Length: 362
Ligand SMILES: Nc1nc2c(ncn2[C@@H]2O[C@H](COP(=O)(O)OP(=O)(O)OP(=O)(O)O)[C@@H](O)[C@H]2O)c(=O)[nH]1
Ligand SMILES: [Mg+2]
Image (cartoon, rainbow, N blue to C red; front, top):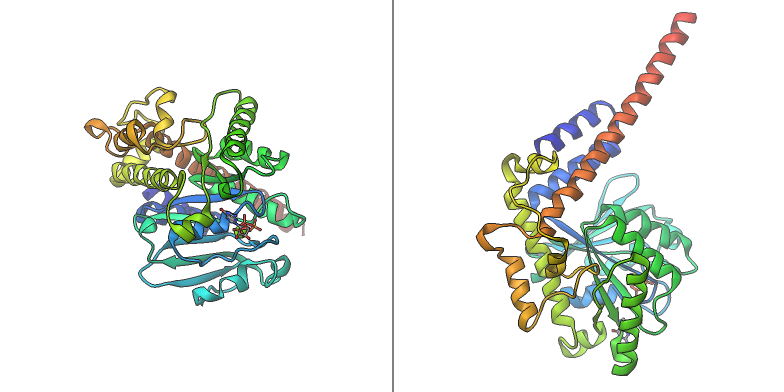
């Protein structure tokens, strides 16, 4: 934490506001215990609807045409309110009802309003422990800019909720996104949404197909995606694998809280610096307990529920492998911050030398 604050200060001194902001925001997120789970996937798979159903509030705009065009962060707040962050200029406080005016292609075509991100504060229980759910523009639509926004955002997230569909099954674009996400993000939960539209036999085939295809491309077995219907959740309560999805998110967030607790007061720096961990790494297979795609499904019901409970309360206070991997993710980010600062400082040095030469010659 201290190192990040120092890094932010150095970057500010070096007049590198973007690096300073990144370091400061990471430090702030760590101290606030925030954990970003981004909902990603092809356009119209129902990402925004899934998030609305998870927070129990239809705050995100949804529809049959490509809708979301700006990254929107849902986070906990006692009062419903929104903040618009612009790429230039001061932030703007907005009522939650106005969110569509900033995040949809319809009201903010090609992002003429210059919105960087919109943050929405909601008193949703799922968000109360620092979990931030992030809505992203769908990939693969005719609006190429939407895909770019999402791809650029992926490296900044802690975990991904990948929304796939059964009809049509996973496309080339989606597969590319999935592989990209798995390369960059330590945890991912995969869901097949709109399950209400298919017979159980078609749904089973779609699950098997998706699982096999991703596994073949990754070169290792992956978990079967969860089968959900956001629409059913909104209209009639939790059906199918909805509770598993909910619990997988809670488990991820609890793991994140655990690591943050362990890492307060300098331990982060130890873990980040790669010195011996407090917790020994367990075999990769045990990762299944938090429900990533590269591991068996999220744990709910019977034996899986017990596994989830173990993941949340590791024996003897030992962190789970997922927890153990979070410092790695932070380390990469911090290293990237260091490298960015080093590169920029080198550039400044070169400029200074050139300036000196020009001054000496004149
Ligand atoms: N039948 C059914 N329809 C759904 C479900 N979830 C979402 N939809 C519908 O699918 C359409 C697209 O939903 P959105 O939530 O806007 O999809 P999105 O993935 O956020 O779309 P983009 O933001 O454009 O990428 C809407 O008409 C939703 O009502 C579901 O579980 N079942
Ligand atoms: Mg959307």
